[in-house]
Image (cartoon, rainbow, N blue to C red; front, side, top):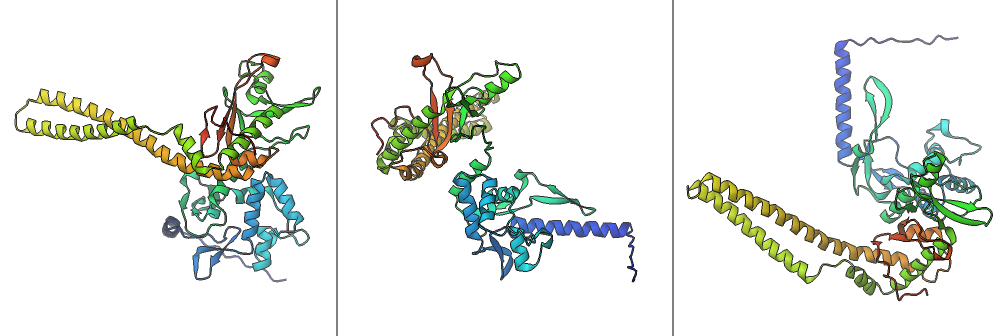
Length: 421
């Protein structure tokens, strides 16, 4: 039996220094490629291939891209990562590692010939959070501690290098944003297997925590209750919050009614935008005030320059100069703040018009809807905020605030006069 030989290499101080300099050059080269938005890692994201003509550029893998879109759409439709894994396995879709092995023979250790479609929830979660599917190049997400150690450390997200629009996107920004909201919501099955339409969307106005779904077993009445209150009562501190109890069926009916009215109002997009702008549009008085403030700001610049000249020529003493300069600077600071406030409100009006059209496009998809679905909530709602109810039984009333996607919270009477079609 042949004996394997082992060669030991001893590196002195000069050799160690050379290794350090080489490592530093490699890191610097990789960092520069990352800043340019070039793909520098060995493996491409699932759904992309290296461009045959440029190994630092990504192109869409037309065979796999539809699966990526399907994964995002399944999440947007309300499926969790485990359910997505199950569906892909049932359809015998090869996992990324299995596909790589079939194509290139790499990653043999991760290939199970008996079950090559064994998708993991971590794989799905990684895909759903990857900004590269928007066409952006994301680099510098992890690194080794030094040239002496191969241990990989994760780089904080705010230190990642992201270069936008470096390759063709596979999914839209709208779908990605919708999915990011959903993947941050922890979906836990309740004991009664009740449909939790508002999970992760309804919050307490006082403590800011989510309302969780429960069921009154005696009356078989599902209801939402403040998790802050429940946590407080369990720890013996009932003062943490109050119940903010909301019946699920009443909340569903109210939400459906608002969405139906919104869909009706959005049919006439121009009128809908006009109505929305009427709640925030700057009037003629404010526009005239802006012109007056800009005129005063220009005058103050001239006055400040003049006192400098008069002081330099000896026409006014240093004490008078200091008083005048301080007075002009104080007024100019106040005028600039007022100008910025008015201009920001004017920009908000323009943005609000564009956002109103985005909301209208989503709302009109649900014309004629007769039942509330999770998709309707995720498409049209940002959040719902519950106040503590007042009164008892028939006298009981509760304020619920609805914050719509794109357009925020609307006045309580905004949809008056609109009915479901």
